[in-house]
Image 1 (spheres, rainbow, N blue to C red):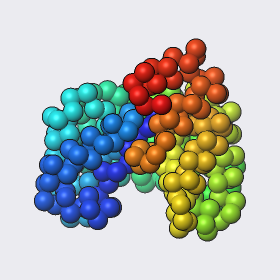
Image 2 (cartoon, rainbow, N blue to C red):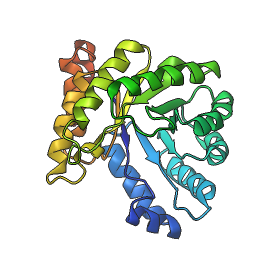
Image 3 (cartoon, one colour):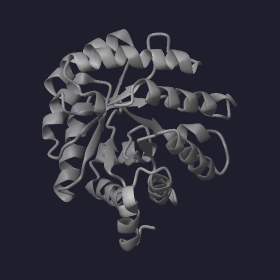
Length: 266
């Protein structure tokens, strides 16, 4: 399972302020902490609404790569022009593009970009012009459309990471069960594709969010989750992912578990 560290996101007030000041020390410390906590990728979102997203994202990419030469990145933007300018700056493969979805206008805008960069990993959200479907059946139907369109421009099925869209259980008690059913059926329908989610959404509005997130992660990995976009500094995230890979048979001969233990991460 891959862990994508979500902390460098300009929707957070502290991150936005640091980005406006080009506070290099702040972003290097955020990167260091997330990598030390087990992040396989760092998600970078520079969308402040100031019209400087391309410039700011390019600065983040270069600043972080210069300090951490082996880092892998996820570029989080809905603006294809921003991605087109910043993707060539990323030195290490694979790079994640976060994200596309089934909305007609957005999908049509993304296809030419993905044709230029067919080897990226693509986070594909199971929503369309009608928004986020309430049923798992509709979400799974959207994956069929996305598979057809994305593979038609050269994106490999194994590079598509479907996001079944975790919603807060505080506003809909059935939301997480709908997500789990979506995840299970996507894995059955498109076994070569991957899955990912922004897990922390599940606990929005609740106390002790880390506990809710932890058990949601356990259930999701059991149903086949391949990646998670989360705050990796939350205690136990890397350990949970590693142990679940052992218990579900993904970590053959427990080699990753043993390696992480020897590194002091278990």
